[in-house]
Length: 255
Image 1 (cartoon, rainbow, N blue to C red):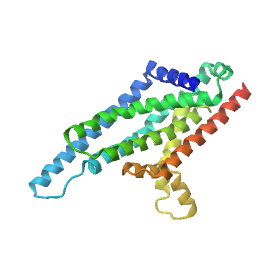
Image 2: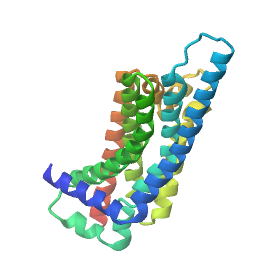
Image 3: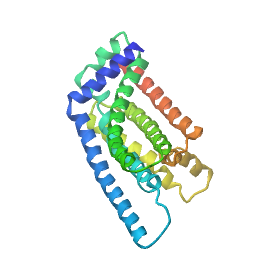
Image 4: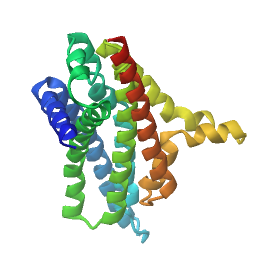
């Protein structure tokens, strides 16, 4: 555990020592803030219009503002995850420090978990920026807290899954650009699987739909914690990191 924490701290420090962390957080903050402004403005406008027209139907800030916002945040991660993971192992291979890392008295699983945990912490820091906007809704309104926390749990699990996939791809090349582009397209494929099978009810379509990360985030977005969705994300993380260990082992033998 000590080695994992040391590697995690080193990775997190390296993110903030380069423009990566600031670029990722700035991009997410600007996009999410702009969408938050428009969503909250439209919510207030529709509320005033409903009062003027004498409509008594209550407006739910959770369903009409927070849920779409956090769903949009899960979409933005498709573009941010490749930026976070592309350098994890590709940069080590490019600079030649991968040999030092592989010959150090540290187990492969500790290296992988440390790097993945460092990437996950940066991802959580990015998500924390959205909490500042959501906190304004709690300051001026009365949203339900539980669905919000469940949705953020879903975002964390989904992000951990995609980061594990990106970590695997980063071990396969020494070029950060190739690692980033490949990670984006694989994550996009996992995202679009549910769209490809939307109008098909065959056995293969059901399997592909189950593998879609969108399918398993829907319950979290509604404020529902389903064990099958938690198991899916945890299993995907474990499987991707297991393949990463095999890829790293092959690098060790080739070295």
